[in-house]
Length: 473
Image 1 (tube, rainbow, N blue to C red):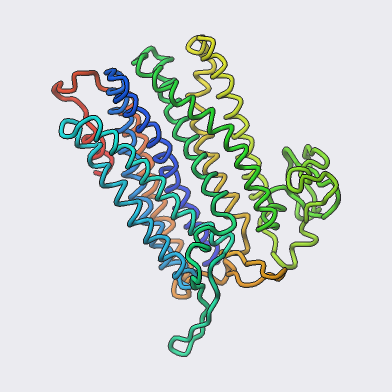
Image 2: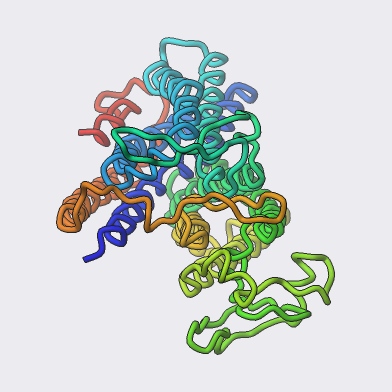
């Protein structure tokens, strides 16, 4: 058993489970803030109902997001000690900023939202909702800064240190803001935000559509669906633009990743864009695919005749990622994005004509569309992280030369053996299955119960606090 491979599997498992929740809470925080704003502006009781309900759902997901995130961070020290030493100076500042400027802001005002219904004014409640949303967005900034620096390092130098007779290399910050605004940071951050908005919107659309199809809470469902549809439509179109800009940036900063995404084995003019296919490393081509000649050259270089570099030019210097996983995860993500655009534009067309609620087939589509929304977020990170292999910290290009970087094979802890990692994979696998079941059960209970009717002082009434306690006990 290879300890590096097992450590990669464990980290992938834990971070993919954790990543079910952060984009959902970011997206839901926008929905919650919108409901509080409408509650304050219109004074309609239905928005009070909606704000209470979506706040409960947000609280459940926030609790599980915090719990699963802690496990992920411990692995930096247990499984990836060499990596942690290499990036410690960079990650220390970014993760400290995340805790100070984001987590405390979000969690502090979350308490006001969950427990302050009869204790603060509607205006302050709306302010608290905005601060919770802002806190979740701030959190994503600093996490994305740290991850983007791994993809495109900047603002740092590599220095050798000797401790107890052993020499090691460490990346140290020389320009904090250059580190923050590294070449891929803004592109990746905007893409993460938009993807989170899509997930949050489709989550709301799924539940609201289910209520409409079953004739329950129809006024609440129509208001929730309409607001989420506007957000989903805007975000689905915006992510297409963001994805194009990010792909051009990847071509400049991580050429081997783009080659893996698109299955470019050989460098030749009029590089084709594959809509689908099966990459074959043995034959060094994409088999059983459909390609548009010259389209990749046009998208990347805005010149149909200019070739996109393939592995025949890149592999010796940059290495070659697992092309199959990178290609398929990237193409599935793009396919889901096109599905979202089609569904939201069609629903918006029916909504503007007052015929949306009659389209039961489309509403059923939205009930299940939350699954590809989750998958698209996960697949985006799979493509990004697998596509930068064999590097855990990508090298820099300085004066045309490739310098620095840390290979994944060299980043694992020396004191952990394969049997220990395998044992922890089994343990966390069981734990996460139980947490997943708990999450589904609690969400199903809230969906089956539905929003609470007004007035809100009925005996036995479910409250935001009840839901949060159910999620954490």
